[in-house]
Image (cartoon, rainbow, N blue to C red; front, side, top):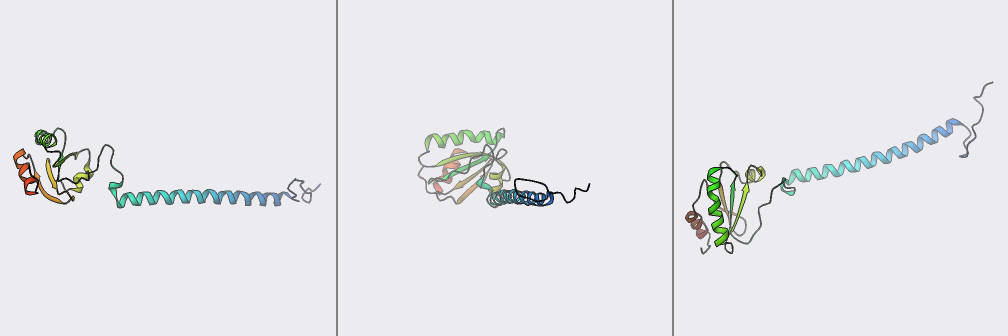
Length: 163
């Protein structure tokens, strides 16, 4: 007996298996398009975030970094590294200004081995390097190597700080 003309009974009201199969395929295709649309939107968001990070690498800091502080005080950035002999010699110099002149100047240390982005930002060639910034954030002066307290004071005086 040939069953090719037999009808399949279903509650959906379909007369044949091929009609049911066609409807199921349509439903699956609609769901597939929804899934693809979600994947496309998620991909677009990821691409946008990555492009923004590429355009502004400081938007996301490296682990363990801190950005250059924005302050209304003249600033000395000490760009060095732990274990560097001349950098270690700068610690008492920085401590002197932090302890005695924190109301007049701001001192900030950055370890360039831990924070290579800041070394690149300031074009550091050797360490330690001291970068002096005006209260407006503009570079005033820079020095490479050990810099004694008296020499640092002279730079701040040239910047108009009454030390």
